[in-house]
Length: 444
Ligand code: SF4
Ligand code: SF4
Image (cartoon, rainbow, N blue to C red; front, top):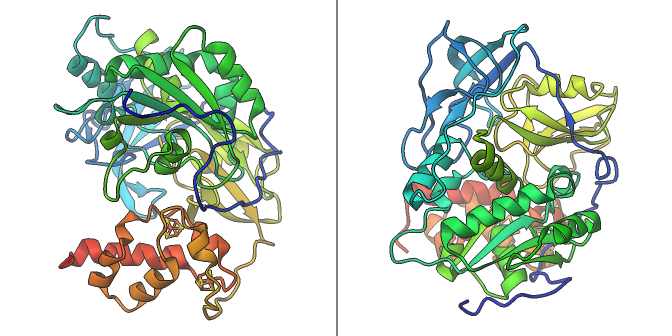
């Protein structure tokens, strides 16, 4: 242990905001299984890093669970068929990011058994590199939304040590409840996944951070702890409590340095959903071919938590949930704070899709007013940035000044935009500012 203290109940970070939770429609709904549909769309880019490389060709028959694309580099991962069927095409298709990206299209074999082709598992005493390669082969990425390849995070670089593993069960985005349900329904698998992470990183202790609005999840996880050197810690309900740096602050009262990583504090953070999938991979050889998704919002007929094969068209998940109500408006993939608004429903669920949120038409777009210098955005920012000033600098395209004010520390949580009474699109402007710094560099 290197100064990482365990803190009990109600811990949190400084700043942040309190958006309405809106979780009541789905928090008690068990995860239901989505039936197979006719076609699946698997973009080669659905994680941070290099896109995967297709290893199948049009016309080829594939089994559910079989590798269909290999990693395109170290920071990349494998992709598997979510269904038994035939590769129909590999072509440009709409992606949730708004771009057209290379996608493997699989037509389902309606008469196949859909038994999963499992991966050959490494021996229990295999070395860390072999196990990391297995995780990459299993296609695992962080399932909290960022979709960072899991094997990269779990491979501790030479000269570094991990003393503490944190599982993120906060699910602080309004509306979303899929992690909540995973913790309630798969508490044993989550703990088993934590065991594996402790073993891989050689960390001695772990904690699961869960917001206090999920008492049943906290209870289920505590029941599953057994004799493990692990604690389940209830955290204050506040956004963005589930952001990596805020979670570490809440659990250890330590700050990840600007531009640094949790590893600098000997900490590794993983999402609870990722831990559950990791357990399935090591115990049964099951790759990441499906995930829990919350389908909710005032514009959906039957809100639900659904286990969805990766690649399922969003339109069909919505149909499975009774379809859109006449009042339906904007559709967002993810939560309302950090999710991506969609122009079309003809995009697939990817490994990072935690929610399909359908807002209604009463969610008005309000017009921007001048800044009244109220300072609310400063009080909201968990990174202690000056969002109002950063937005001004972004409008003026002053990249050196943006870099000097640490614009790159912004992780786009949107707390500033949420708190602004003048409805200034702060996070959008700051995003532009970050792109400017990336593109032009700076003399800082
Ligand atoms: S500046 Fe960035 S990190 Fe700070 S509140 Fe706004 S979006 Fe969040
Ligand atoms: S919250 Fe909005 S109005 Fe207030 S200081 Fe920040 S940008 Fe200006």
